[in-house]
Length: 349
Image (tube, rainbow, N blue to C red; front, side, top):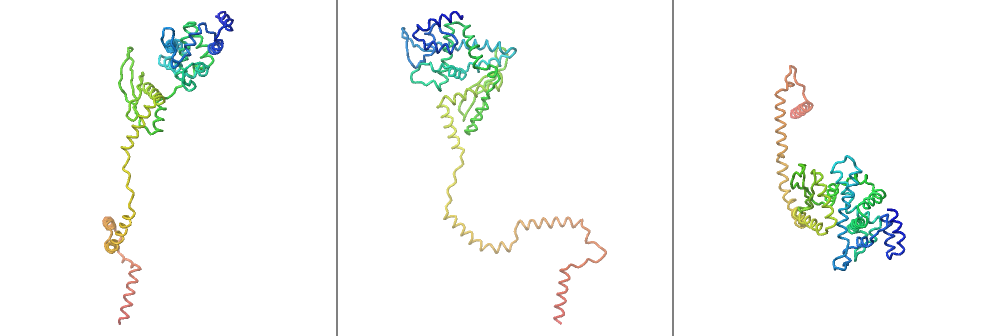
């Protein structure tokens, strides 16, 4: 292998695309043999080029091939790296390593995004375009140098230098929590509905869940537990909210319709003149009723007094204080009354 690299390096000064060769060497760790494959891998469909047969010339076919190769290569690496781990863990880890976001970040980190040729599209914030180019590049490596070269590229260049496979594997993003947080922050109604529960060919239970936001159908997720299906449905729904403006517009339109229906009727602004007239009427009528209110005892007080008397009567029935062999002492009021009565009697005489 190293002899071929030396031969390729010796040929480099005589090639027209020596800048592209140098850039690819920095990215891949080796020099391309068939440069046309790599040029096609970096050609976005927006350019609109065609080959000699009039067929579109872009990276879509290489992207398809690279996607399949990546699944196989990363699956192989994950299987050997995590001995004894179950299928679900391995699948989840591989999915995170080959996700569109991961590949897009890799493409930008390694400088692949800067080499993409497109018409009027910026790759700086386009993870899809960058991620697709990464897959197409893997497809080009496979056609140019074979499966072993793809394996070495992922193991020695990506996982050994750029990505920590253990951190990726054990880092769990709670998509359900993220979606709930978003819905609560925006006061949007969101719910999960269990669509069905089946069993796969191995008789394992499979759950299917769908997200509904303001009554609108969100994404569907399937997994070997309700939690897994909700996580997948939440992840896909979050992606839709980020990438489909028409979907998020429909959500907030539905929210607006709901809140309008739930709003209480707004109270009419009070008429100040009417309030003043009512107040005057109240004051006038009060002068006539004051005497009646003063003469007549308050109903609540009458009721309370009645209850007190009844309570006292019950207590008196069992009160023996007034039964005594000695005469009862006179109260102060009785003594004063008797004295006044005696004084008036003496004056009359």
